[in-house]
Image: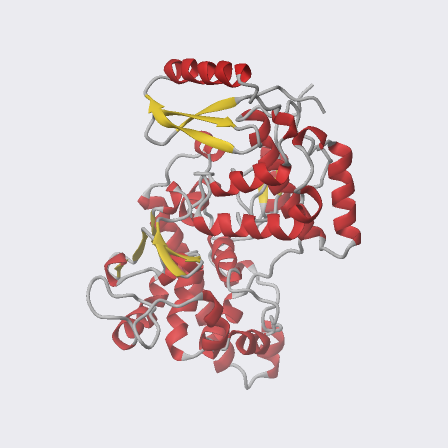
Amino acid sequence: MTARRLFGSLRQRESGRWQIRYRTKDGGRVAWPETYARRADAARVLAELERQAQVGGKWLDGSKVLFGTYAEEWLLDNPRLRPRTADVYRSLYRRHLAPRLAGVPLGQLDTAVVRQWRSAALKGGTSSTMVAKAYRLLRAILNSAMTEDELITVNPCRIRGAGEERSPERPVLSLEQLEALAGLVPDRWRAFVLLKTFASLRWGEITALTRADLDLEQRTVRVRRQFLQVPGGLQVGPPKSRAGLRTVSFPAAILPELRRHLDAYSSPGADGLIFPTEHGQPWRRSNFNTAARWREACAEVGVPQLHLHDLRHTGNTFAAQSGASLRDLMARMGHDSPAAALIYQHSSQVADRAIAEALDRRVETHRRRVQDRSQRSDSPKADAALGPVGGPRRREDTDLGPKKDLETALTRADGLERTTGIEPAYSAWEADVLPLNYVRRPPVRA
């Protein structure tokens, strides 16, 4: 692979000023101590630094920089990475990329080398999902080396399908299973299970909620921050994206449980956590399964493989089945990306309230059906007419009408394709978009 002979690069900081970074003879990259308001001024200084380095014999061919040196700098000095994402990427690099690729110069890192690395990882027992994640990280690092620092002219990560994950479809609970699950976890977790599901909240979002975020009269919850797990403890930060700052309506059917929880378990005061530990501290994700008896409860309901995040997936599915448009779902879930911003506008509170009211009607319909079944349980004929628990619903059993074939409709009308993983190739719709995990296909280029 050919590479441009590059001495340094210019990068615009968040402040808007331009920073110069250049390479020393030993391959390290350093930042010039001054920054500049205009790019042209920074470019003139960089050109002078390069001239002086060439005269002094200190100029370095960028293609000779080791991948490991560049990757470690990229992970350390990438302002776009959130703390948790940076931790995940460092682990992927350390475990899956560094052992075979750290000592390879960028100029020698071609597609054949990448293919050999991938083949060796798969043959060595690394799961295909983990290899796909590591491949996407490798592609992102080399893309910066090509487009930002101009150390290489072509990104060698061009193996078709190498970054795709083929994960099984996650389970979705029925209303009957959800209410059974909420009744099986310890009492202090019942409202947590219901709110996480019906408001489609992430773990970090729901554990960071305070009393001030919950409006029982309007039946809304405001998402304005989240807890992040970082080395050394928990860190409070903004939601995952701009769209993560949102207000979500929830059905009135869970109000009694929320009121009871606030009285019994929540910390006092407007800033008190709604779901604290017994000592008033935020919960850590690693403690949840034991504290909530999660595995035991899931097994008893009949879904032993259920993950906590599947509650959000279930709530999103309920919302989609209640007639919400994709635009409303994106706003409710807190998803955002440059591509999605071109297609979707912010959802109105009226539409969001309609979603919650539809969920409320669905819960009440389910509960009436369960109550009617209980009252008529002495009649074998009635039992036969009702059919098995969790069996097919008839149109007269619900006010939602028949479900459409969303998968066929969406893929034909909008050109969507399934996506999985922690960082999909097309981030417009992320991995848990409801109910089908699809993203818009890129246009076919001639």
